[in-house]
Length: 96
Length: 478
Image (cartoon, rainbow over all chains, first blue to last red; front, side, top):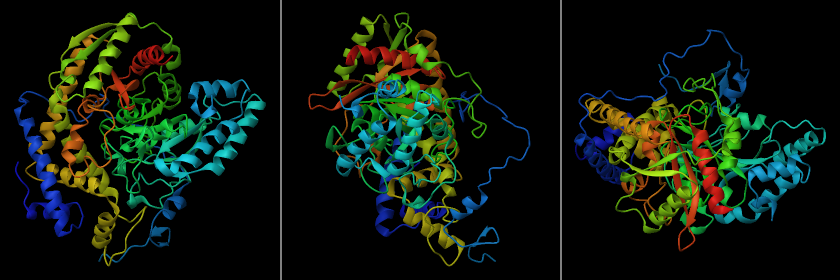
């Protein structure tokens, strides 16, 4: 847990598929470092024998019958795409 | 009294008994929107033509005695992160510009099927990330009580809409306080339901273990009417337990003199605005006069709720927002290859606050940091939840402030995200615990800014906080 360098910020941005200007690297670096520093107070809390909480409903293994349910909006969903539609698919640049 | 100043319950009564038509009600609100929206910026779009048609249809149903529900013919404004079939839905983000969903979010669908009429989509912080509405990708919503101040957030447009009499009801979403805080800043009632009480299906996901969908309106009674239609299990959201939905309106009338209310000492701290503290002391007195027993309690891990929340929420948000790749919906940018499409779309489409939270979450979840941040925060979450579990063995509900101050000036926290996060100190603990909370308007500051009080109840006990909120509201405002 420490201050983020310019290199760290650029690495995180790359993982998150974001492009940052030099100015943004400085600005986000300083803002995010401030927040990370604030997080350090969590280490004051003794959590040795505490289980993590990932959800609060108490529900487990929610299942349903494996039956197809038609919603009939396939074409409308395709129309939401900002690319050309061809053969009932979204056309994107070549990937191979 | 002008129709648009009336509560949802009053309007429903006037419509059901034939005193006024749905069309008259809808026109009263449209008139206000047309004359004041330019200075408030509460809405991202309006749907007046469809609303007029729907109102005419409701009037026909009224005449033929075929009303759908007590909400039939009543107008509503829906936060822009709810999918609304055939109506553009952007979550106030440029990345979703032009997205017209072919289906409705369940919570909205249930209200629509009850006869409610959409008047417009409410401005909010982009993807519900923020507490001021200054992080909208389009425009900053102003507080109708003072146009130089924020309406709150993230459901700021929903709150401002009700305060400005643009609609008698609105839908909001609350991940860490996004319904309760703007309700407090704008002088209305906002309900954050227990996690799982209302379906999240069809609302853009921010932090999936925390997001909750709820109503905002003038009074607790109005919120009870709306929740009645919204609550319940939904097979499209597997985190909605199949628990009975009580008759919320019937509970409102029950006495509250048998209830014990806790005042957690960790919520009455240095930094709490003196006028907010005074409003809470007065609220305590009103509840005592109504026969409730007020006792001091402790929620010892409260101070760690903000840091735990601001680890967990960005982690979940960064994962959820990875879906915005510019391929399937929204405003995709051009690129020579897929990588360029992704990067160009996300760089142009997301605003600064969203980028900060995505990067924060990406960092905290990355190799070597997962245990130190996410897992640690989830353990602290367990302790915060246990604090509430233990408190609710002794008290029926808890009374706290909603926010440390009344609405602040636009621009104050814009370059200081940490300061903005700290404003959430009184709302995020209940979000982490998954319990329910109600923001009730209880006072005004010397400069005329509204101040709310927060009532917290155990999970799935919305009827209890609505009942106490109802009695409290009536004692103060009637």
